[in-house]
Structures are given as structure tokens and as C-alpha cells.
Image 1 (spheres, rainbow, N blue to C red):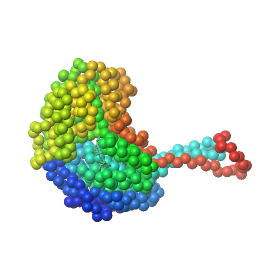
Image 2: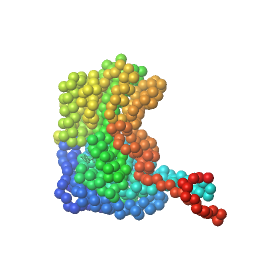
Image 3: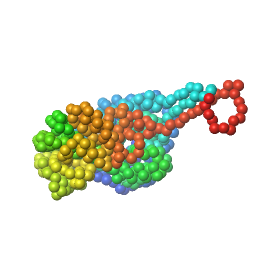
Image 4: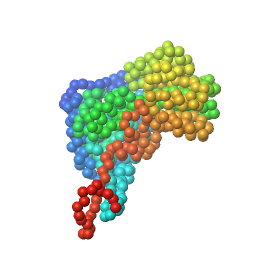
Length: 502
Ligand code: NAD
């Protein structure tokens, strides 16, 4: 198998490239490290998206009836292929997203965890059985696939986020239409080709590229049963309200503003290292990035000095050259993030490290910003309230642990958070009282392992089922309960009363 990164990337339907209704709308895909357009990507029209849904809808019936043994055998083969070729995928991620190669490989490895989970589908989908619930009456429950699952993913994890969903959806017996981000679409195409190589039948995994037109078609077509969305909060709200209004089961993961609380007893060198890793890794373009360090006095001066010293040493540049941090996704996004730095200065925050300038190890006009650090940030500033999604770290100073907890709980977002302390009692209270879905204790980016589910609270998730882990199998299947009685010859008689168990 070779992925053909042609001038214009086409859709993937029924295990083959698909040009759809010959639509002319396309988008540009950049190499963010050079600023050059690498290729074009076709944008699916309503008709093309409907054709992909038709392929999935047709495939879903037979695939849903295929034995678990056969379905999971394909997943095992896919797991082996992906593990043996992960460097190839990492290179595609770096070329289109810009994140450094090590980080891209980390993304693939976290995606592999979910493929391994999907290999356990037979165990995860086991039903329940009750014998003799009533006289001669048995009850069992079983889980059946929902049918056609739509997956709409963001640019920042072009391989991992699709892998959060499609392996479990498919292992559970559904057919999928995946609409990846139009900014870095090739990883999804590569994964779909690999699924074909693993033996997946035609139509079970389809990829359409594009924008709102494709998304709206997926949200409104009656043949789509479930929608898994990951992206910014406003779009997540829109997807959730539109999809549910059209009778679909929807999980819509939104944006974030993640805080890291550092108590005075913490190891400040460890906390500074972790703030750097979680604040500037992937140039801050992670939904679990730390964007606010909450320093409980009297340690703020010392902590800020340690973070500043480390941030100045980071090597920024082309992700293929062994740098620490790569570019932002587009020039437009880089300018937006730089605008937040201007706004932070104008609102009176103390600019400790200015990322608007400095050296970059790359050729051409890539979309770079160096790490930026603000101190004495207050909750009314836009650098505090908004999800910047760039390498901009803010320090907010508070006088007490309680003040720190109140600040974090006041955020409209609730994706991830972390506490740094050596005090077990404080950590326990934090874990209990914090209003956030994923909590780290001396761990800055607490993305759960594949067999625990991932999901935030408040404006970071609309819908009640989280991604991967046990909740994914619930999301991608419907429960059915069967009550059965096999009559013995002594039974009989009419009784119009409500059935009771005896
Ligand atoms: P985005 O919201 O711009 O795009 C996400 C998807 O929605 C893409 O496939 C895009 O094509 C589509 N889309 C864009 N505009 C649309 C519209 N008007 N109508 C319908 N669909 C539309 O997000 P992004 O910039 O690609 O990704 C970054 C965002 O994703 C950040 O806010 C980040 O926090 C969030 N994110 C959240 C999680 C999480 O688990 N909570 C994980 C990763 C990323």
C-alpha cells in the first residue's frame, strides 16, 4: 500500500479514492514549517457526502452481522500494521500539522492504545444474563451497533482523534464516515488505506474531506445514527444541538483552558519542567495543554523565574530537525495568537518572555512563534478568558489553596487540570472538589490511558458519554433487554394485570 499524496487529495469511499460529484471546491493544505502549500484537498458537496453515507449504510448491515471473531481479527491485523509503520504516519503528521516528529510519534502511540482496546471488543460487548428472574423466566441484555457513525475531527491530533473513535465504532459493528480537519487531512486517508490492507470490507470506513457543508450533511441525514465531534466549543455546541435535533446520539468535545495549581510545598523544578512540557508542547495546540499556571504565594517569583529560564532555551523550528517545538497550523492562526500577546501587554500583564521574534530553525516562511510567558495575569484579561491555542503561558498569582480551587472552578471549561504538591491531603481535597473531568496529581497532561474513558466537563463536552475506554462501547451500541419464558405444560391462563415477577 502506498498513500498517494497527489496534488488534490480525494475522498475515500468503498475502499477506493472517490472524486464524488466532481465538485470544484478545494482547500489548501500547508507545510506549516515552510509556509508552502503542499497540496489541495477536495471539499465534499452535500451530494458527495450523501454518497459516502450510502456506502456506509449499505455496508453496515452485513458488517453488524459479522462475527466478533472476524471483526476483531481485522483489528488485530490493523494494530500490527500500524505499530510496524508508525514512523510513516508520524512523518505525515509532522509534514501537515508541524508538530515535532517525537510528538507526532507520541500521538500515534496514544492512538494505538485505542486500537488495542478495540481488539477487546468481544469482552467489552459481553451482555448480562439473569436466570429465573421470575418462575421459568430468564432475562438477558445485549448490545447492538447503532448503524452508521459519523466522526468529525480537529486539526490538532490528525491521527489520534480519529483513532479515539473509529476502531471502537467499527469493532462494535458500525460503519463509519470520517470527516477529518481540512487543514491536515492525509493522516485519516492513510489510516483508512491501512484498514483496507488489514482486511476491512468495502464501505465500513469512508473518509470525506471538507468543511461545514459536509458536516451539516452528516448532522442532518437520517441514515447517520451517531456523531462524535471534536473541535472548538462554539462548533461543538452547534454540532450537539443540530445533531440531537435530528435524532442522533451525539458526543461533542469542545475547547479548554487548563490550569495547573502549584502549592508552596511543591518541587518547583519539577513543576517548572512540567509547565514547559504541557504549555509549549505541540506549540500549545493541545486541548489538554496547560495554559494557566496558578502559583500559590509565596512561590510565584521563584516559579516564574524557573519557567522563564527554561522557556528561553527551547529550540523552535522545523519538526523534522530535532527541535523542541514546531510551528502553528496556519499563518492566520499564528497572527491570531500574536494578537493575544499584544492584547496581554495592553491589558497590563507582565510580559516575561516575548515569543514575537527570536530564532527559528527552518527554511522559508513558516508559521512560527516562540514561547511566550506572562506573569501577574488576572481573570478579566482576554489572555486568561480565551482559549488561545498557542505557545502562550499565563501565570496567575493567588494567596491560598482555596483561592486557587475557586479560580479553576469558575472557568466555563472543565477539560483537564493538575496540582503540583507533596501534600497528600491537599491532593485528595483537590481531586474531590475540582469541577474538571480529567485531573492530574503531579502529572500535567492527564490524558487517560486507552482503557479509561476521556472527557471533560462543562463547555469541554456536550453529551454524556466520553471517548474510548468502556464508555465508547456504550456510545457505539444500543442496549436491548430480552425477557423470555419457555412454557412448561402446566402453565396457562389469562391475566390482564401488569406483569409482576414471582
Ligand atoms: P474547529 O472547531 O475549527 O474544527 C473542528 C472540525 O469542525 C473540523 O473538522 C472542521 O472542518 C469542522 N468545522 C469547522 N467549522 C465548522 C462549522 N462552522 N460548521 C461545522 N463544522 C465545522 O477546531 P480545530 O481548530 O480544528 O481544533 C482545535 C479545537 O479543538 C480547540 O478548541 C481544541 O481545544 C479542540 N479540541 C478538543 C479536544 C477535546 O477532547 N475536548 C481534543 C482536541 C481538540
